[in-house]
Length: 364
Image 1 (cartoon, one colour):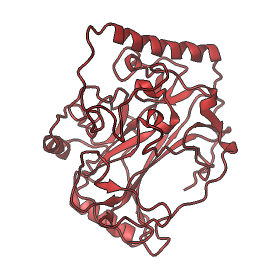
Image 2: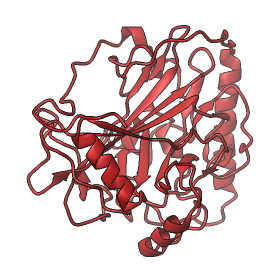
Image 3: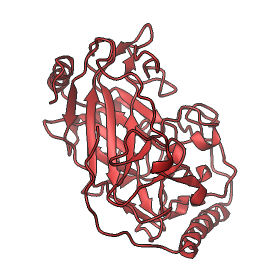
Image 4: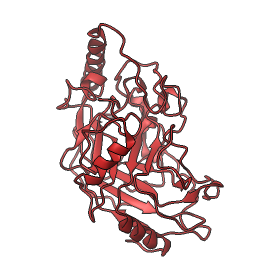
């Protein structure tokens, strides 16, 4: 999918000194919070592992908490070679339709630093701030999955057609400006410094499979893509995709893109789509729904294809290496840590409509 380039106003230049000052402020805020704590905090399960050693892990990093990305963490998108296309929906006789969900772009500014999938009921368990679209009831979850599903089933939504699904991802920030949450957990107190940027567009699509028709997702299916701990876990489960409008065939996985004039920063979140046919959750948050084979696009034995969720987020950012994604303090705001989360709360009839659309090869 290629977005046409469009003119935009000139970007404002920011000085390296200002960026360095903001980075230092983030580190000092986190250091002050640690110093003020009389005893080490009790460990809580994060990403499904008590010690943080799992594939979504909570291990520490080498850099200072909240350190800002440097120039070496950015790349001119024109220097990224075009990527060979992998298996696409319908390539080998599968379903190639697309169903789009209209859920907005978080124009209403709904944020928090919790994560109901990987740390349910843990206050500020994410240690970074999430954008939310879809379900709006995001601030009263418990550690009980069934109780949380009941909350979601009754929540208001920004999506059309009664779709109460929840989509959330870490915010992107302009690190040349102070954020309104500079003194708050998930913001400056956790090293996430800067003004939150609202996407100029947020496209939510459900796509087909290269080999087979898709079957409906079960209600309350949870799915995640990427790894918020990828920088300190050797890239395990990383799935970051950074690009620019007009250059979508060029994907950077570990550096932020610098876009030419008239082009905007883009994040692409592709979710797993091979469901085990039984579970809506799993202990590791991943094994119940996995990715198709990267060579053939077929789902592994024992799984069946469901509509594949893709979120595409587009941003206008300040000029130069002056933006960063939120993350855990130890991850250094590395581009490779980009990730997103989803819980399906579509009405069953709407999910059937989406499946019919996709399997018929239509765009709905």
